[in-house]
Length: 332
Image (tube, rainbow, N blue to C red; front, side, top):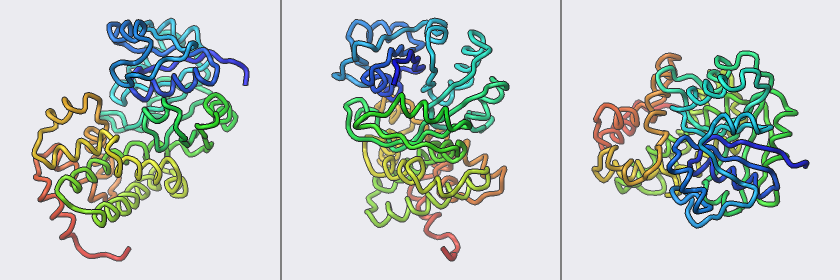
């Protein structure tokens, strides 16, 4: 397609990987990050030495800590900041370009405190926005940046906008599928992080493949129940952004959420584990947000509840497993 000017907002591993992908596809890409010192270091190194070292930036990828420059000079905006910074970033964009017509995001999680889905935050900040889309699926940033085969889902309120984003991203190793089920993508992307922490805890305690398989299956059931209650489609949860992403994060140690669970099972504190992981572990706050949301909606989510108790109420991981195993027997 015709070369586009694209701003990727958020210079973590996932934002950087998407920026590299878009630049490799021939587009002019500006990767924005709020930390000027880190952005300057990336500029001089020609790579993201903090999160994706040894993967060079394509020639058409530049970096900046100037948000106004990124917003005003780009045809498309892709937001990839952590969920806790999502609203703040949108408000800053709105102050620069209040008449924005479209925006996409690859952020996973719910908004802290309000436990709103991110499209609800977008609607509040940009009430007149015509086109919005979310990108989600089973993706590790390093593999995308390296050009290893990957598939994702793009869900938008306007199918032509989803198709536009698909054309920007697709190449011989990156395959997007399109959808209009924004809710399911957001629920799947947030809740799978909680299940990955649970899977890490289970493996760290010495439980085997049987346990992990049961946890993933019942975890998907919990996520689908929440998705359906909020208006998403259970069929979407069986796709890349639901089951696919859940399998990825629960079974591979590239997942920072799974690594968090493994660390907790060995007796490390959350702070110790975060220091070792060196990146935001979205599942920590997601556990609190989804637990609160489930309570508000009167939805039973026992795995989420136990992870919440471990992370935020000091429950011993061994006791959490016992609580799950001694629940009342039910039909599947």
